[in-house]
Image 1 (cartoon, helix red, strand yellow):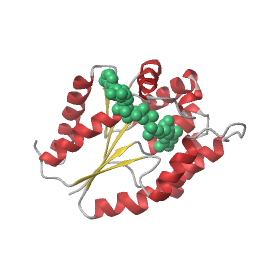
Image 2 (cartoon, protein in one colour; image 1 turned 30 degrees about the horizontal axis):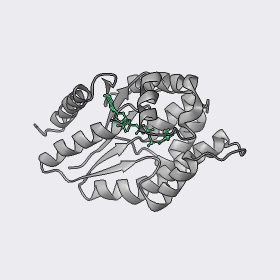
Image 3 (cartoon, rainbow, N blue to C red; image 1 turned 60 degrees about the horizontal axis):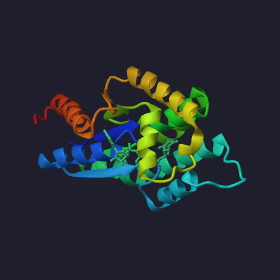
Amino acid sequence: MSAFIVVEGLEGAGKSSVIGALVKHLEAHQLSVITTREPGGTPMAEAIRECVKQNWDEEKVTQQTELLLMYAARSQLVENVIKPALKAGKWVVGDRHDLSSVAYQGGGRGVSLATLSTLRQMTLGDFCPDFTLYLDIEPELGLSRARGRGELDRIEQAGLAFFQRARETYQSEIAKLHNAVTIDASEDINTVQANALSALGGFLADKGLHT
Ligand code: T5A
């Protein structure tokens, strides 16, 4: 048995720390787990990550370029890492996946849902996560946490209104999914992790794995 679990949310939502807790929990139940991040996770996709996050001074990065790079990196990761791992019976815990493109490029940049749907179909077909944990946070708080970690990258400099639109899109898209749970990420780190583990427990129970 294997599954693809994705953790989504704005910058500073706490995805990294939640992923650490999920992996520990799954491994404690003798499950073999790998983690991925998007964009990234293969040598080529990591190069795309560098490219898409960096500032290009006077050269404007068009929304089309940003969008295509996200899907190029995703295709590399899904075909070379995620699908083979799932086939080998491993559990995959992903730091972001397709919903990030819907929230950031769709909600944030204004790319149409029709365009996103075409790209998704071309890149992923019907491949999608088995379970999504969405860490919901106000952009002001998330960005202040991210700032505490260092300088903001090109996407993080997009401005508050961009992140507000991305959050609204996350919220409306998550509401459409039956296999997703929203966690209030403004709580302290221990509470967020405990709530995430409880949601994971619900998913595992649905799969017949009692933890
Ligand atoms: N992107 C990505 C797109 O635009 N489209 C796409 O399709 C995809 C896949 C990726 C960038 O690319 C964009 C989104 C991003 O802008 P990234 O660095 O991988 O960049 O992603 P970020 O989300 O920016 O990474 P962060 O590290 O900021 O977010 P996390 O992982 O959610 O936050 P985390 O866990 O590192 O925590 C950040 C800080 O906050 C503290 C932590 O200790 C840490 O210092 N913290 C808390 N503090 C108090 N209370 C809590 N509950 C806390 N949780 C964490």
